[in-house]
Length: 92
Image (cartoon, rainbow, N blue to C red; front, side):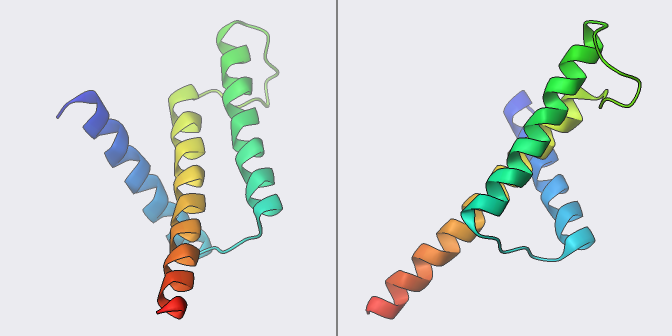
């Protein structure tokens, strides 16, 4: 499998894990942004740790955290697509 396929599979697996852990989530835009920024912050922590700047409590698996960012963004897109599909169906 090529790199893109491996990444997309990892994102899908993370989305499945998230749904199992929290159920299907629906949030307002502000809440989604808070969740996404928290995940981006963990990517930054992992980057700092790689350079020796991090704290012991910082995230240390950069790839895992990048996948989390992509999975949260995917969940946001799922909700937005669902909302747009509902609006389209109501207009028919």
